[in-house]
View 1 (cartoon, rainbow, N blue to C red):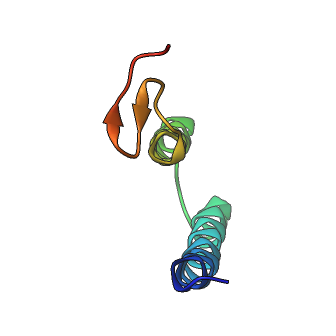
View 2 (view 1 turned 180 degrees about the vertical axis):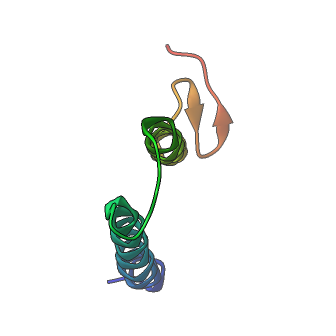
Length: 75
C-alpha cells in the first residue's frame, strides 16, 4: 500500500469515528428529561448536518469535464 493510501485510511478511520461519536452525542440531546427543545430546533440541527453531508459528497465527486490535469471537453 502506498504512503498516500496509508495516510488516507488512517486519517479517514480516525475522523469518521470522531464524526460518528459526535453525532451520537448530539443524539443524546433528545433526552427530554434533561433538555428542552422544540421541533424547529431539531429541524435546524438535522438540516445543518444534512447540508454538511451533501457538501462532503460534492468534495469527493469528480466533476464532469474536469480531470486531474484540468478542464477537458468530451471527444
